[in-house]
Length: 238
Ligand SMILES: [Zn+2]
Image (cartoon, rainbow, N blue to C red; front, top):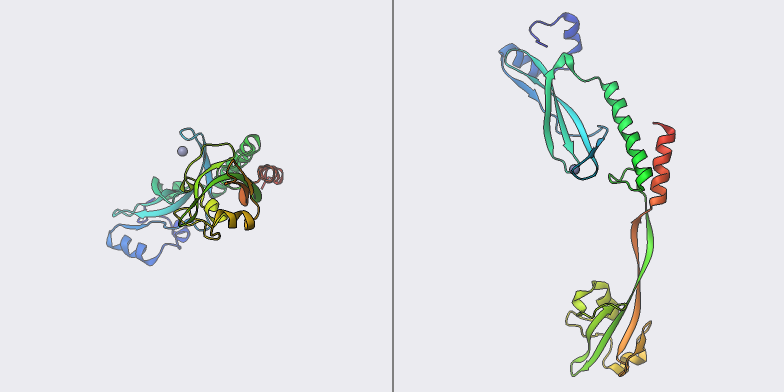
């Protein structure tokens, strides 16, 4: 579409063009509007064969006026990492039909919702709700008395392999109130620990091993409610 040869009606349609564009047209210079935000843009999505999963993508439009007065629409894509890519450029009078685009995007979301229901998995996180769940883990610590105090000699999870304290999550060290070298900070001696330590079971030939369970709340995807939300989306057909 050449702005030098357009009809008065077409000119009216282009009233949104900023002054800089008109000035560039009159001066025979290039002008370009490059989009820089996806605010207010509906996410599109597609199934990626390379990753065997779905990715979200946003399409945004720009404008480019060349020195001869040709006005083009430019199409850019933005991925979930915020990487922008130029996709296409075509004459402004062949610009995309918004209504048709919108319907195509909704249709892809419906396909996606069907996939989420079948696979009980929501890779782009559209329907996912999280729930807090209690998870507990049982550890055993082998303690040794030293001149500097009681030290954690080694640790294992359930019947797993023994390792040093630093091989395990920091919550284990915190539970034991041990410093970074493995010394128990709350207890002066093994006897003291046996008398006062709570929520541990003592055992072993020298009665120097303790077994304890650490419970913590972790956030997990709630698959059942994810599937429900995907079903609601399909039902409402929005
Ligand atoms: Zn991919």
